[in-house]
Image 1 (tube, rainbow, N blue to C red):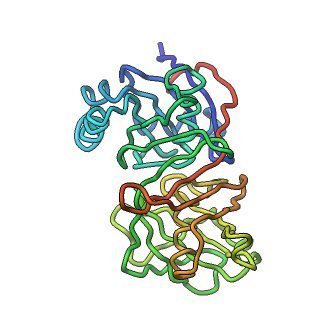
Image 2 (cartoon, helix red, strand yellow):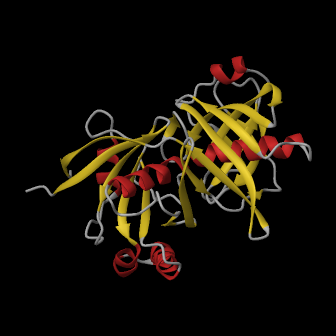
Length: 299
């Protein structure tokens, strides 16, 4: 008999996930099982899987880098760990929309008192703190890194390759600036863009158009589309939204604001940069919605 598991379907600005509670880390989902669950014709349909597991249990049952991250989460007092898998089954470091959905699930299930204090969640990109916000939930993604090497990006719909800026916000991104909305809308992201050189671990690829004017009342504004590593084009990508705001801020120079509004096909997300313990962190805010729950037999 196939194993049956409980699940909840959720999304953050259209970036959707299958949330699977597995507090004691008894599930060992194969890449193929994840891919079937995420299949939009033969499964539930999602951009990825969020396994809700206690950090201590994951540390006991996993190996390699995941075990190291789980042990670090235990040491930091993060009870819960977001085991995030892309739609093709591959493990990923972080997901900015996913962690807000994860926090919403913890709050609604009574597993974390997020209304009273920030909730610390373990990920493969380290410990992330999530709080309630005026847009829904806000996650501190931590410090970021701007890569030195320029990457050329070829995409279907662009006449010539364009330069991209590498931004690491716990997972890797390459951000490409486009001059107008028409060029952004004409992109065919059913075909994976090509990066030259190709990063060793791959990267999410964002295409952005700055608003005109770029800044209104101290808030920067941009539009974005994204091709997610291991998924394809998605309606939103939380870490990609943060990376895009950071890239445009970097291009704009010292006068650029620290608050940004980013429009994606699935809605609008907020980004801000704030000092934390002597370094700048980037924070992402936006809605998190739980749609329905059920049970499914694993393939």
